[in-house]
Image (cartoon, rainbow, N blue to C red; front, side, top):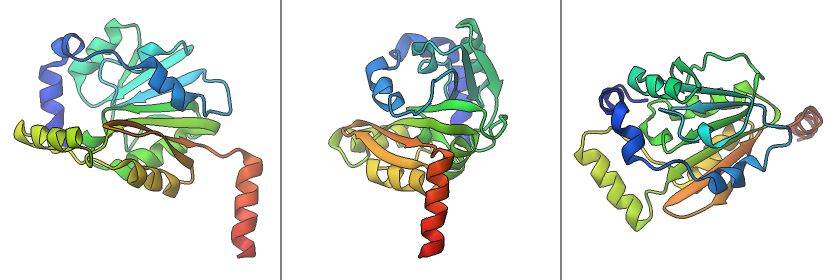
Length: 204
């Protein structure tokens, strides 16, 4: 998260749940159903009080966020909170089944680093689900102006640009939903798929 964006979220953490609606379970499911393995271990990156991961029934639910105030709220929701940077996740390689980044990627400084870290920590068949806002839509252009007006250092992807960047991490990327609020997913290839990909690269 941009350093300048952390302090406001820290200050308003107690009020965040009152003003922000819960994550849309149906929209999350549209991405999560692309997973090719059971979703038992889920991490919510830049998750604040865990508004996305709270919608899931996973046995292990972790929230990683740089704002201490947000993590205190996550703890009150019986989630495991860890202070950290999405571009340097405190998780082992191949240790989780799903990574969620919900309405938060535009606040993060090293966005490609966040996507690379998601790819690293996913198990084969696991899924990255990113919910974001399209700056090319009318409402998106308004949001960009509003965030700048309040001092956020936000940077927004279009859906296709985000899918391209996720694909560069080695995940199988696709746009699941378009519009002002959109969803892009990346699926970690299973070993047989990875082997075929390497073989085709050698053949070329």
